[in-house]
Image 1 (cartoon, one colour):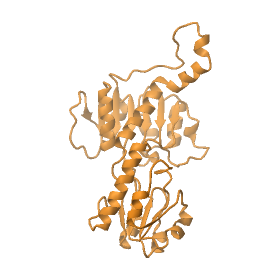
Image 2 (tube, helix red, strand yellow):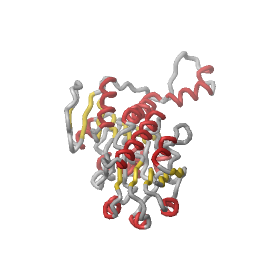
Image 3 (cartoon, rainbow, N blue to C red):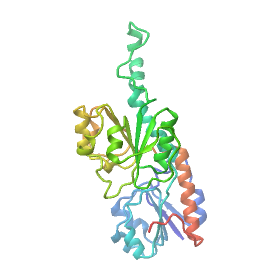
Image 4 (cartoon, rainbow, N blue to C red):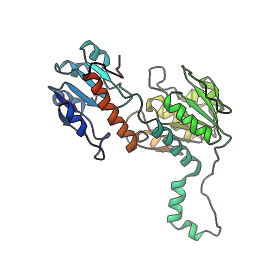
Length: 318
């Protein structure tokens, strides 16, 4: 059986191993594959593993041997799943692997906005503390989170993990989700509609999946609901936010700051307005990428493939 990994570099840039995959068949691993090269590289494969390489219906129709697609991520919009179903190709994803890592990264962004640790460290290295007449100085406002309100939009696994950290830091938590599930017993927790979450929160963290109804949910109208002193954090999906509207709000002082690990196009074009917006931290989609999370992703990828080959597929996308 031929197995092809179309874009394995981000999962395994060299600190993990594909060795266990070889037990299932003959393996070819490519670091990156363009949409134009996907059909050629996948020719003859029964199994494809991929993260961001698009597989269109046209590409899938040119792969008569293909029986299984394993998406190396939670999001699967890069695969034409309707075409795959018509062609009898099973598609699976990895529903959860980076929950703790992403929740942790929310607070890496938030604490940097609150304390500007990097900027202050650079100032010390540049000699500003040595030249200071005072034993302490700061170059930006310093913000304590205890007693403030964290609004979480999308209260699934990662949203709840983020909420637990917020609660541990003494924050009140507001949550919005179309499916509420169990209510946490954290002091001050409550459910709220989106407008109330945005209006009342000092920090809003986005954890919604990307659907047509959530695309652009953070826009000029909804940003106007937020406090001018509030922060927006997005470690979920870039297209949840209208980039120009957020940049305009930041630059006009209608929002205090933003921490973004995702953008609407990745890599972003240099003209993306958020790259130069006031008090806007942008990181290159790394919240998921701790070695621990990637090792879990590798293990779950192998488990999905093993289940499929054993006749009991799991995590199947319908």
